[in-house]
Length: 307
Image (cartoon, rainbow, N blue to C red; front, side):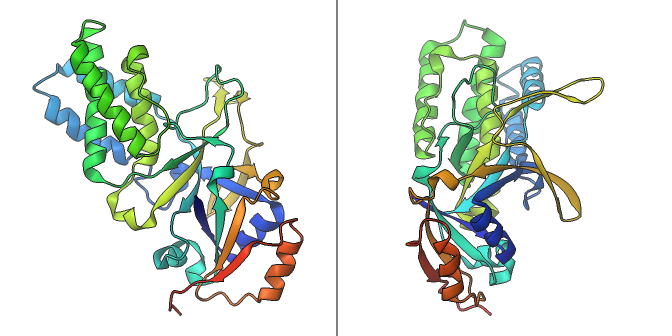
């Protein structure tokens, strides 16, 4: 599948010359509810289930969720390479580019996002996920996961096996629809497992108002440990690169780099689309691409009549 990364002319030049994509903190995204949208759904679900489960169990699940959240680093793509709202919002109001990447070449998994852990070994450091915008699906999946957690909190292993298998079967079905190649671990589950899925789902569920973006995310969540007293980093594992820093919107922001240089000859970049206001000459662009060991990248012009 080709996924498109919209960027400014400066960003495009940096990506093509450096052969790197930047993954920025989720907390720095344009949607201020990014990463916290699911928290509102969970709150609604708790209210709906308050007569079915004890308040003590609800409080414990809520506390576990809040204490387990993580903030990953992401690079955003769209299924659509010529979308006017994307040109306006992410490509210098139409003066930028959309780079079409072959996502099948990304060295990544397709699981529910989670923070790296010590047992990961040689596991890929990137995860590719499609964003879910459907409010009904969001509510349904969150409710099933919350119920899993509440049942385990209240009953431990003394639960209705038929009910739990039915819940698990539903989660498997909806996960496959989302492109998650990972069955829900019903036979090796606990409240913590359900919580991990909830916090991972929070990374890929988004406000339906953004649905036309048709977003996919390349996600990186390294394990970084720090001293509780000094806040000094004591250990960092499974990092994609050394952490980098830049100024964005008058803030210091951290990011990681995905170096795709070794995948150029494989065709990781399939096409480049010039924005509706972009007047870059074909000869200049072909000269740039000729330096990348991959001169057959298709060049297109946006069909949007926007000026």
